Figure 1 (cartoon, rainbow, N blue to C red):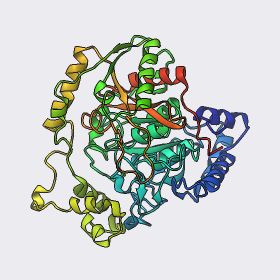
Figure 2 (figure 1 turned 120 degrees about the vertical axis):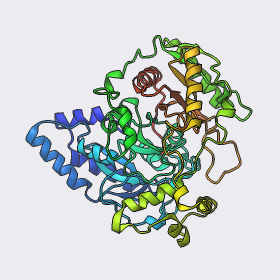
Figure 3 (figure 1 turned 45 degrees about the vertical axis):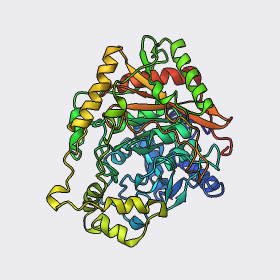
Figure 4 (figure 1 turned 90 degrees about the horizontal axis):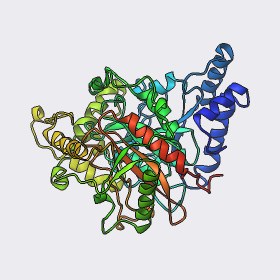
Length: 485
């Protein structure tokens, strides 16, 4: 089954229908048959030890009769997560062959749970683009639902790979859009968790103050199974201290088909009623809102955040040079370069990133002032004001979650930089710390996926999981791409 789930696979392990080795062999075969021949180009490198790891897990199960939480599950990892046994490049030729000294925290937790890192996926180089997945290390990744279109960015490689079933689930990262956007374009579920619920240790940063790593999967349940493995305190990432006492024993307990009954959902019309919103995306969004109501939710429409445009003015902070330099230092003596300036001097980057790379170097502040004044969106006055404004609006209308289309437009054609992109994800979650989940709501123009985003209050993952699961289970919009049977 190309749409198989973690639960299905582990049940097949228990009954002896398959084992870890045969499963991994099947996925490696799919990658070999499809990835390059179709020009999907989602995978940068496969794990040469994957079969050996599968054999070890089979032996463990035979001996103990017990399966770990992700026992034998092949996972696709975005190429900005450190992997101690595979190169980690962030999509950059400059980091080709760079092997970190240890795994990123999230990768380590997945492996401890029995998951197999099957492959590293392509990404927008340095995670710069929410729109495309193009890198100097691996070129262009395409959308499995229409190979002439983009999968969004920057986690488009993970999204395309999971959508085409090159792995069961995947990890992406999200600074402004990069989990939820590709999830929407590839008919997946993507979770950007509360800032501080999951560790950023060992992830090549874009802007650390906004960066979050998290699950991308074909179902809400599978995404949740990843989330509950990676959530929790990590001393290597101090911001995760705020998660103490706020992580439930498991998140699967919130998978409730009736989870929308009594929920109060606010519709953020600002991202729907625009002059550039595609009419078919709008129609799907309106139908999704009606479905939420039918499933028992109270709909507040419109939900208004007073002064929204003013609140988001100049709210981004470009911390790329500082953050990358610290990441390079973490690689120790094996770091290929010591700072961003050395990387830029090599010219080893995609032409579309030239301006971005050079602008990152144009800080002429003295060294003692190069550390950005606030590294934490929980303590920056701009973020506090934005977060409080949203919370006040939610309290006024007694809102449990806010919804809007993840993208207001279908996936662009590869090479198209002029038509409306429609990215709605850059502000509400990334600059508040609030969690957000994108889920499929159907297809425009017969084959182009669209998604709906739920945003909740800090550590409201249980509510968002209930809402997303109830909607998913009662609408069943997920379907695989026809070109990857």
